[in-house]
Amino acid sequence: MPVPARLGVFRVLCLFAVFEAVCLLDTGMLFPRESSSREVKELNGRWDFRADKSPNRNQGFEKAWYKSRLAETGPVIDMPVPASYNDITQDPTLRDFIGWVWYEREVVVPARWIADEGTRVVLRVGSAHYYSVVWVNGVKVTEHNGGHLPFEAEIGSLIRKDPTQPCRITIAVNNTLTLDTLPPGNIQHMDDHTKYPDGFFVQNIYFDFFNYAGIHRSVLLYTTPKAYVDDITVVTDFLDNTGLVYYKVSVQGAATATLKATLMDKNGRCVASSSEPSGVLKVVDVNLWWPYLMHENPAYLYSMEVRLMATDSRSTYEDVYTLPVGIRTVNVTSTQFLINNKPFYFHGVNKHEDSDIRGKGFDWPLIVKDFNLLKWLGANSFRTSHYPYAEEILQMCDRHGIVVIDELSLVTSGVLLVRRDKNHASVVMWSVANEPAAEMTLIKHTKALDPSRPVTFITDSNYARDRGAPYVDVICVNSYFSWYHDPGHLEVIPIQLKTQFENWYGKYQKPIIQSEYGADAVAGFHSDPPVMFSEEYQKAVLQSYHNVLDQKRKQYVIGELIWNFADFMTVQGITRVVGNKKGIFTRERQPKAAAFILKERYWRLANETGRLPVWTKYPCSF
Ligand code: GCB
Image (cartoon, rainbow, N blue to C red):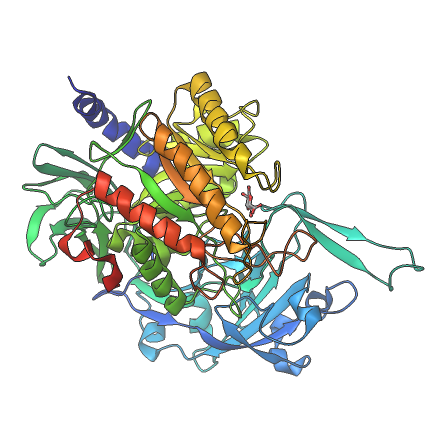
């Protein structure tokens, strides 16, 4: 049997087991969507804000700022949500602030939400960095540890207590990083009064991006009926021309319920349906989900509508939730990454959630611009270095066929990340960590949570650091030859890169992705012959890497992701020139010379390996 077919049979046998593992995850984290039974109210915009600048940063708790309007306990300033607060004002102490900041706003809750006891009202924060406590009308409703992932609390009973009161939401957020947080950091107090002012301390961090803080993603109120669809898990496969959508629906708020799952094609035509809470939907003449530039009709999404009916002594509830579903398979051999049994070569980027003014704040214009740039570049993939990105970004990847290596940061958020992102067709692999110290547990844990996807971790060029390699499916390697090693010596790249690949493959016989490489270039700095930090040097590094990648991709190298898509902010230091400048685009998303080198390469790779849609034959038309 050819390898893909053999793998196919194995997959079908394993799918139900996979499925059980994915479904074991507690309660659901379905993205809030409007439907005939659900409403969503965005609370984005202007909030009141105050940083607690008291010496112990604890005055807000000591004086219970959550008990009354924030403006009554001290001065407040305007703060946009979502956004990092750091770059919003001209105040350097707020940019570099460490400790608790307080956000507050009042919300008008629709009267019908309050009147109808059969409606659940949920408050959801898309993400806040790093530790958050949330109160509604002075009553604590939840707290959450860690940025980059959503958290929520049901607040219906609370706002029903006194419907005449406005709904006042207070969120305190603390960005202090310690050795127990992820990413980690530590606070260092400097007590030498001959050198430092009173109370002086610094937040040390062990990662290369600015410690942006605040409410970074949307804050929402949404409703569901009391009996509701809590979670949906889909795992997809296909046999010949028939698509298979294995699904499981979990319900909360009702002991028994009737369900109907209907799969619709792009035109809203029903292609399969079932009345069971779990099972398989079979799609005849399936349109598979293909990556951008791999197929003339990429990113085909079906819609799976789940309709629930439940009755209790008081009422009948109907809930409707619609999930986009892409049908595709992912497999790994010792030399290839297969999507729908066809070899896939990652030609893409690493990104950050980062831009000027907003910091890590979610911003639609930026997201759409970035997707246009990815397509212009001919990129078919990216890695969510070094934390989970906003769900809306993954939805864009599903819609546009951009393949994602989804990176998590620790075991608990690993559970949450798999729970949150398991249904995205674009997510083809989990990355458990970047250059980590203790990866084995993370790898095993993630594999157990979701055996339907390969797992990787990001290592560096030192193949002796191989604690995780035996357990991963794909080896991802970061290396910066002629930059951090042998700076200025472009001539070392061919030999060192070749050695790197041969060492890793020789030892493990697993496919390899060059998951980071690159060089800083300050846009507008020129030098011929090239010197470090000039645009010419960045170009030269890329070209040298590409020569070796072109040899090795014929063997076992299955991808290359440039570090980085765009320049991004970091802590101040002697190796950073107003941030990390390894972007091929500036922070304002203008191309450096290297972007044109990469664009030419990626379109050439796409022409060699994929089947381009007619409209992409002319990349200049973007
Ligand atoms: C790396 C890190 C990334 C850094 C990059 C660099 O290996 O994964 O976070 O920004 O190198 O430019 O040093």
